[in-house]
Length: 60
Image (tube, rainbow, N blue to C red; front, side, top):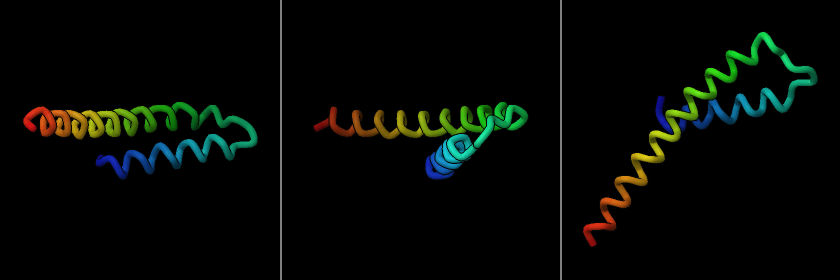
């Protein structure tokens, strides 16, 4: 999953949770697990970009 896909999953899941009139406990665990995977993908990509930028600017 790339950053754009992972971010879309997080956004979609946040909207799903906000739009619920009543909590759907049967789906909550699925949403949480899916969101955690997407969060980890986003976090990993952000760290990779930060590291690359830091490395680029350290050599200047």
